Length: 496
Image (cartoon, rainbow, N blue to C red; front, top):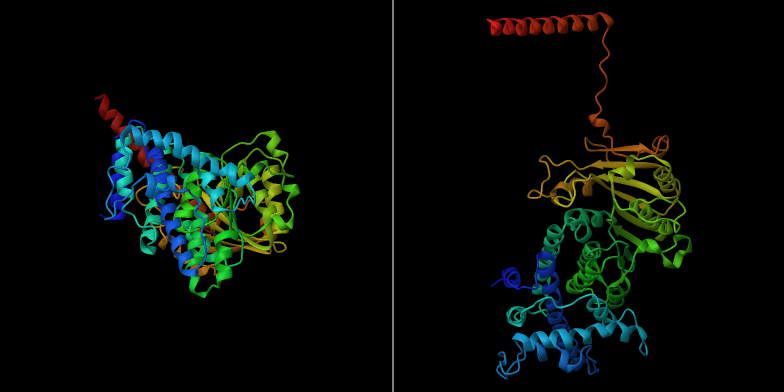
């Protein structure tokens, strides 16, 4: 049975449980079980490494609460010890009243104990489980799930890679089913195109202030990991502990994002739960800034006046507030790629105009990728764009690329890497084609309408001589007269 088939089987089992209602629940419940099996394999691997190196290793979980003790204890022959393996009410009681309280306590212990380290794995575990509860009502159902997940091997690189892909699919399904696809999932072809052209390097910090399920950070990790053989041990450790940063407002997305990063191989993600917009951007200093910012912030939302006061340009539109946050948190010389709705580009009322003026005058807004309608279906049909800018002086001109698939995008025909291939190829050369063009910043500053208007589609007006115009009018008059005669004949015939 393949990994995908195992996950599909777990989904079918959970659907029958009285405590599970829809994709949101079964993804959440599958996630915490997957994570605890991953953690047990991670601990075992660290213990083996410690033995080989002659060093000690202190496991994060105590013996009673490790997977190998409570979930699937084994006999000497490696088979499930049915005398020690809990099931039914006994299993439910243990998970609800002992295991989860123990795991939830990690956040407080790691944050306040001696030598507390918010970057520690212990702290991450507490951060995940303080927002989770076991929703599987039947201990027999949970027993079936545990037995399947116990067959997974998280010490296998190939299986970890396959799991990361399967988990991405679970997150996408959860977003689609709950109407939160934009919150949980940005189409991976769009994310990959953004990363290919930004091309982050080892040693740079990468930030997403609206992290969701952390798709941008996960793809950025994969981008850096592809060159692992070229990295020093110090560079790889920096990637694992000090590269990825993010904030997420909602507890469920935070949990899914944290697990997504850890299951992809990021040992210590710096993801924090909180509303990014509560931070007064006037207090942000250079030390608080990041080299790379990648994000698809929520749009269409409204923020209260108290939140708006944290920004020099006050507006209730979340997309404008996030844009100001990103501009303020980008390091000198740093690069940003931000997904925004079409309204940010074409609206020219006071707040929108001021933000775009700031962007053109104090940043290098060098590229705008116009995405096709339907990229975020079925969650949203809103037209979107990606703004690429750097904190390095003002903008001289903007290179536009209009992505236009031959077939209209739908839920069943989503955007692909192929659709964005030409954009990636032309990004550096900034060539002018039927789909790409350049406009000076001074021209854009005339009205601050930055929306993509492809000049290749602007047909020149046909200038005719007055005599030719008169001839065309007479020809059209004759056609109209002829049509009126036909209609009159029809009406007369009908009366007869």
